[in-house]
Amino acid sequence: MNKKILAAVTVLAILTAGVFAFIKIKEANWLACQKKYAASLLDRGLDNEAAEAYQKILDRGHLSNTEEANLSYIVGRIYFDKGQYEKALAAFLKVEALDPKNSLIPTVNEKKVICLENLGKPLDARQELEKNAFLNPPQTAQRESVVAKIGKREITISELEKQIRLLPPYMQSVYTMPEKKLEFLKQYVATELLYESARRRGLEADPEILERMARIKKSLMVEKMIEAEVGDKIHVSDAEVKDYYESHKKDLVDQKNPRPFEEIAPRVREQLAIQKSNQAQEELLQRLIRAENVQFFENVLGIREKKK
Image 1: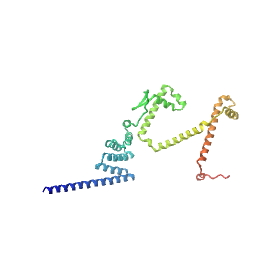
Image 2: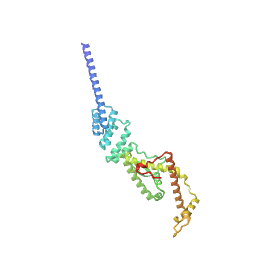
Image 3: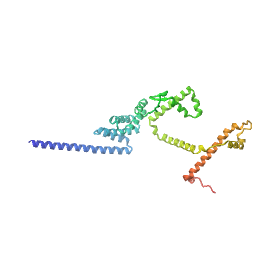
């Protein structure tokens, strides 16, 4: 009798294990199919449907913390891209709670700041930014005098003076008096506040801004290259200034109010330097055109070839 009972229990245990295994396999298959379906919806731009499909997986459970955090991030990213910042923020907070060491956390933290800013919560956004160490002001070896604070960020007197030195010389002289320095400081703080707000809104990745930055970068690089290639080669001798003055005296000297050569010489030297610079730049450009085998197809623009 005991043997029969033992056999029955064994059979029941085997059947139970088989049922659980079947359920587990079925659940795994459902999960794989649902993930594939949700990803397919997302690839086709059906964002709302994709978010719902991923949410069904999350509601079903049976996921590890890391798996649930990863799917919550996908849901949050969908809502984020659609500008639904409340739902996005909730999803990102869930990622942080489920798996604080997840590799996605740095990205999640950045997007949380943008969500808070767009939800009209700039103070919370700044606190989040500072908490996650996105705002890292330079540390000085010695304690400096602080002239202003933006949240926890300190603006020192050396930072202020550095910004003033970046201005053109004629403008630097304006900000020598304490009252004028205070005026500049307030302008600088206002710019920093607006910049940080724009950064928290994610405008660093705005296509128009990136394009304009690329154009500015290109212009600065060209300017630097010309300065390196041409700048040191421009020399105007006193003899050249004198010769130019003598040959262009009618254009340079006001016959009704003539001025001595010494007063006109600096302007003459500047004109000669500009001429030499333009000539050197043209020679540099022509050299590059020959080296790179540049061709212009004027007929494409509707310009007829000139008859020789």
